Length: 260
Ligand code: MG
Ligand code: MG
Image 1 (cartoon, rainbow, N blue to C red):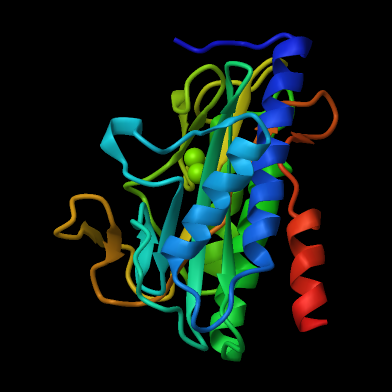
Image 2 (cartoon, rainbow, N blue to C red):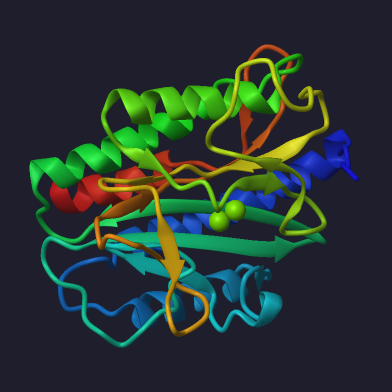
C-alpha cells in the first residue's frame, strides 16, 4: 500500500531530511585520515539527539548504529568500526532520523583526503545519476522514468548498477512502498503523483554489479572487490519540478572549507 502525504506531513519529512543533511554536514567536517567510523557514528548520534530527534537506523531490524558507514568495496549497510580511515579511502555515510513521527533518509559518499581521478569520477557519476533520477520525480512520470535515467548515466560511463538494493517510499515508516529501482524502462511502473515521497539512492560499482553480504550479516560488498559509491536524497513528487527535501549544499559547504 502506498501512503500519500498531505502538505503538513511533507513538511515534517522535510524537517527530518534536513536534520539528516545537517548531520552529514557535521560528519563532513570530521572525515579525515585517522578518524574512525565509530567516532563519526558517535558524533552523528549526539547531534541528532541534541536536535530532539531519534536516530532512524539504530535498532531498525537490529542494526546497531546511527549511521551506515560503507568503505571502498562496501556498497551499503556497513557497521561503524574503530579502524582508522586512510588517505585515499572513500566512505559512504547513510543516515536516517525520526522526528515528529516522520523519517528522513539521505546518503553521501565522502573522499578521505586525496583520492585518484578515477575514484573521483565514480563519485561524480554516482551523484549525477542521483540528480538525473531525481529530476524525474515529477507528477505524471513513472517509477521507470527514474530508474531508466539513472541507468543511462551509469552505463554511458561504464559503471555497473547494484540491482539487489533499491530506493523506497518514506514517511511514517523508514521503508514504504513503492520500491524505486535504479534501473528500468521509461514509462513503466506506477505513476508518480503529488503526495508521494520517495528516497532515490543509486549505488554504482566500478567493476561488476554482483554483490554479497559479509559475515557480519549486514555489510553489502562488491563481489569482485571493486569500489562502490552511493548517494541518496529524500524527494517529494512536484508538479513541475522535484521537491528535494534533503540538501547536499550544506554538506558541500563543509567539504569546501577543508578542500577549498
Ligand atoms: Mg539511506
Ligand atoms: Mg534509503
